Image 1 (cartoon, rainbow, N blue to C red):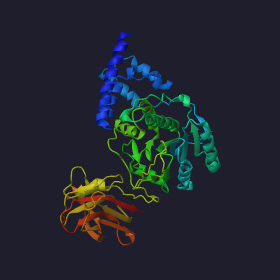
Image 2 (tube, helix red, strand yellow):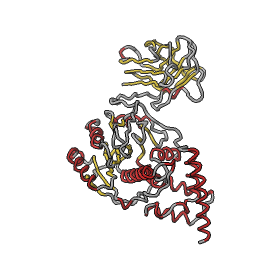
Image 3 (cartoon, one colour):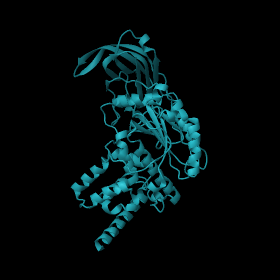
Image 4 (cartoon, rainbow, N blue to C red):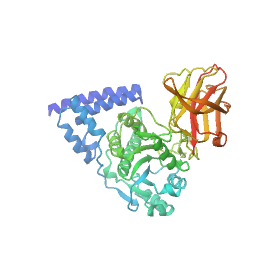
Length: 482
């Protein structure tokens, strides 16, 4: 007993130090990772039965019987990060028919009663209206009505069933509720970042809401995308997502982002949902869900954000679900008609410009939110794309400069297309080029290229026609093929 009391006061002292770190560093990644490491090392003392569900208690009891030396720590963390067991929750089906088959994509959203405004029905409507008949066959929508107010739930379910009965009957819309008795303690939680108690309770409950939603959706599809309940979708967003997934085949990723706002448009492999659900439950009182997602991604070894433009989802709510406060956030990369995503066939890229740091040429050709950045180019400098196989091009679009560096554009340049690739000094080059046109205000765009070029294209070359003093950002190179 005395030993346990000693350990208790040691832990209390550690977390007092960590609380000071959080006050100093506010919302920094470093402070949270510090908390994470300490948590894993002292997990058998820190987690109390009142903070975990029955399914997780057994895991804690098993690990607490061993001394957590360094080898045991690595093993324990590996067990947690690969944990694939479902959380033991008995859901209430408020509107549903049995799922007939596993689909390509599940779209999940959680909703609670708002003091002002209600956008849930518009969000569901947007999901279905912006999808074609063929796309509807490959999606399922799961709505978690997470408010404990049963009267509100009954009204919302009635509205949903009246407006979307055919989608429910078709098995592509499910409305669920996780009962209150499955929730951990939501009062008297730690006030990280000096948040008021009601704010801590709101964001902590939201983490649990999402955890239960993720847990439910784990086996319903191959992929999962999280939306909020006040979102508008771009047309044919599923086709755009499938195109991106195909382009990343063979590469490792944990999260793909199709919006830069909060928890909107974040895509996961469905096999990662159980451990993400457990992760949100373990740290539900530490910080908001979108911050936790950043750490989850990093812990699974995806260091950088992989975000695609244009964004496929837009925040449309005017009032926040927290206290009904105003929330005017908008994603300025959103496009209502974003179906026309470029193909960008496999290619090698080369430039003789002076590249700044790690802003290499390949970043201009990626659909991820990255770009090439070079020091001031001189007349005759080139930026070349050499395709693995000759292609027929329908459309080409090249954009230079960014919003915050609007003068780092190609002030004087042209775009050429080439044929007849040869090997030359350990590289491949096109023998002949034909000029398509000049850049205007830093941009180049041309449609129906196939009607202007009499040959299959092996190379595209951006050619600097006049030396400039400004640096050059090539923000994106987009190519559409047949």
